[in-house]
Amino acid sequence: MELPEEVRRRVRVDRAFHGPDALAEAYAAFDMVLATRMHAAILALTAGTPVLPIAYEFKTTELFEALGLGDYVVSIDGIDEDRLLARTRVFVDELPGLIGICRASVEAERAQARRAEGDARGRGRAVEASRVKARGPATSERERPVLCGGPATRARRVTPPRE
Image (tube, rainbow, N blue to C red; front, side):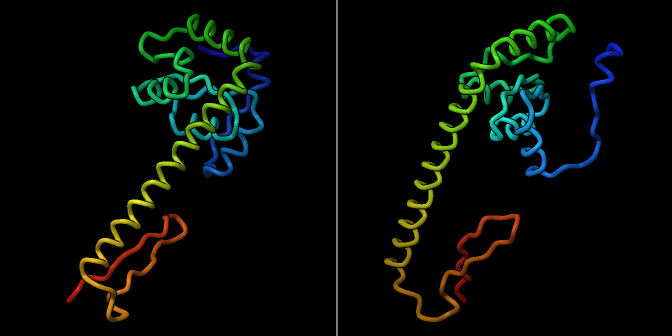
């Protein structure tokens, strides 16, 4: 399928590599994103931009169903130009209302993730406390837990092995 000339003049294909922060910043300036890749959809959603997803795997469908947006998922199976165009028109018509729904759904998922992170940290502290109680306090520097991690990883506690 080739785009009509009047559309091609308004389309720019950017083939350069962009990191996640740059992509999220770009997506934040869009009215909507049509995405075939789940991670692109997630970046757009976290930037506050509604996404019309084309799902080629179940995980995209599951994500959008969890956000309450499952009705907007277009399955790649059996997709054709007319069906995609019709779904896109509906999406664009409903876009003003979708902005708030997308943002609220994403914020609810963020809050749930933060609660889960807090719960996991709490369980981690409880486990560490029970280990300390079971073996007693560290008696040397070698036994003290240390923090490690780099710019691309979360810091984590590592206890050196006992000799």
